[in-house]
Length: 322
Image (cartoon, rainbow, N blue to C red; front, side, top):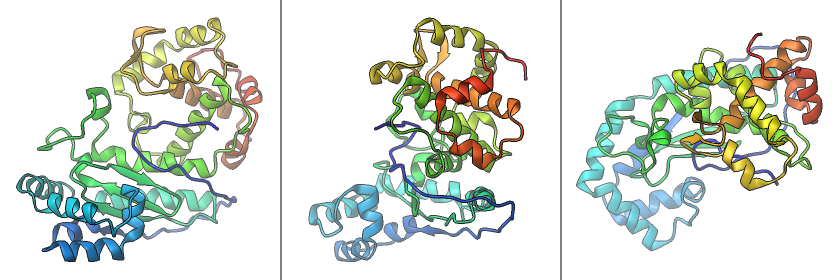
């Protein structure tokens, strides 16, 4: 079974889709569970709130809402003076979530136009005191808003700087859409090769770009603009390394982790090569495929199952020209 690491802790999901060119407006509402949590006045009231929202509790914390120790812990977090300060900063930073609603509405509208069976997940904003950041399933999205305040936050998630940079609100929607792409990303599950994983990531990135066409590539993949420029210019060297080391058909999970997983860089290629370079390269191949096969619809692209055929028909060999 293939494991995919993008950015945050979440459940990846399965689903089915169909195709259509019809545009459909998607109304987006985000529940402010963060405000409900922080308005609680007693442990008994907290226990009642968590019990009535067991789906949220179980999804985000992987525990049961009747656990008295858990209830006490959440109540302690909600009443601690420093936590209250962080919540106040979160609330003032995000306001009424109008930007997030607008972005989700655009993405969901675009998904629905291509996959009419798509049902928008319920979206819940919460506050966890930095204990959780993001949960995604096909029916539920939970956002720990305080994790995404950005560099000016009073407190931030405990992550190395190259990951921490992506804990800002502009990354929330692209990351959620990448997870939702798994519903439509069809590759042969029996193929555990480096190439299969690379193209899975590539298709997930292309899906996100298709649904959020006005979102910069840097927010979709999580590279800086400088990294994108340097990687583009050096892609012939990256491709030569992959081929020379005979990586394409390797099933070795440890080897794949070096090129797809979270690292500050990939020294095997060079000190300035960014981590997750294999994800970017997969995206590049998918882009080349669409250039070479312009009559292939987006839905057909997402259904392609054979990695070797995708690579062959993309005619990608490390070239930078379109």
